Amino acid sequence: MATNANNFNSLTLHKISGELDEEEVRDLRFLCTDYIPAGKGIVTALEIFTELQQRELDVIPELLYRIQRFKLLSILGKQKTYMEQLLQQPGNSKISNYRVLLYNLSKEIDDKELNSIKFILQGSKKKYQDIKNFMEICIDLEKKEQLAPNNLQILLKAMKEIKRFDLKSKLESYQNMTWDTQVTLPQQESRRQPKEPNQGMFPTVSCPAQADAKSNVSAGTESHQEIQQAPSTADDSAVERPNLQQAGGSTTEKNVYAMTKLHGAMEAIQMGSTPETSKTSILDAASALPANSLTQTGSNSEANQRSSQCIGVYKMNSKPLGICLILNNKSFPGTHFKERNGTDCDAEKLTQVFTTLGFKIDRQDNLTVKHMKKKLQMYQEFNHTTNDCFVCCILSHGERDAVVGTDGELLHIKEIRCMFSGSQCHSLLEKPKVFFIQACQGQKLQTACPVTDCLASSSPDPELDAISYSIPEDRDFLVAMSTVSDYVSYRTGEGSWFIQTLCTCLEEYCCLGFDLLTILTEVNRRVSEKHPSRKQIPEPRFTLSKMLVFSARSLNS
Image (cartoon, rainbow, N blue to C red):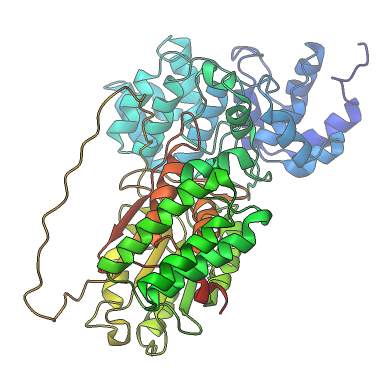
């Protein structure tokens, strides 16, 4: 047999074969079904490797990568990071998305669910009673032509029957594919744990939305880079930071002096200076801005000035402004929840931004629900009298209106809010309580809707006067969810879409005097436009009664 780049020394392959157990050999056999027919009498790993070598198929490193035997890759002179980068590129994967999808479904189905599937599929017959895994069922269905890459109906029905709607969503997402090639996707906050810690198994597996339509790949450079993005690669700046002029400002170094003056003018308004002095300060600051930003920045400043004169603004000048509690859950040992790679980037960015805004940071990593409650209760009982605000950032897996502890238990957001209500935390009465929650709220995938030419109309809500000065105990809350109820939330190796975009917008707009709800509106826009087909829309929920502005006084604390 001729020696080429596709062939490995027989002694090397023999050594690797000896390291693989019976289950792993079965996995290899299934992944190679498209190359080695199921009826061919090949049962050992060495026989599989030899057959692939004879067919001159350079697929052995990918097989080891797919079954997560990363240490064995080094024996072949390959590294895990190399394989990650290689498989990011469309066309480099020799194993079809369809085959990998079925393989990974099999790893998420437990014995009880497998028995249920066998019962559903076999009817009154006992044909499947000796089958030990989901992959064997798939092979049998393929032989009977009941299952194929373009025909997944029988599996969709089975997943619905056993109420595994997360797996049903993965199958449905694959059905929407118009091409079968390798695509690297951002991870969603998925809930299943791989066999080994897996920081790079994002292609085709980590996200139910497995691939874009073919047109998305050829769409544009920025979109293409976002699709190719690996967890270890920073977000494409063109995607993360849209044209600021469209958003109402600029933060380039040459504008720093002018922005500082403008910010000072806005603060003067909030601190009670005369209208004449305030107007002069704003015009003086605006005159230092470049012409291309003068109109928009000036209009925003005037709008904020008008708003501040008729809408109350929360006091935001204490030192420190308050506590910023960061609950960062990355690992979930002993549960079915996957490790949340990239979450540390979120926690570090939040620490940086809220320190700059004047908060005292308390970061806690990997807490069970019991310990999350204990930490929250500590700040429920804390004396916030000298502080102006309380911020809590929760980074974890989640279900609808709940977040997950490292023990796999749920902590409901309603329970968290109750801890800091006016009756339970009196020192925060009439002060803003802000929660930023990065977590999935279900397993559904957002639908990308084409925008047509339509007219949007709005009408102001009627104003309701308070009967007395007593206030509802649930007033002055802002809970900013990374996604809406029932839907997934995306995350890369460099952090989540929501948290990274939030921090970027806070850095850009706080110094311009924008209130937090306005900033969150821009966060919504950026996140919603972040990817051509995978969609996410954050959801701020609030009972704020005033404008919340982190001003220059905060930034200089």
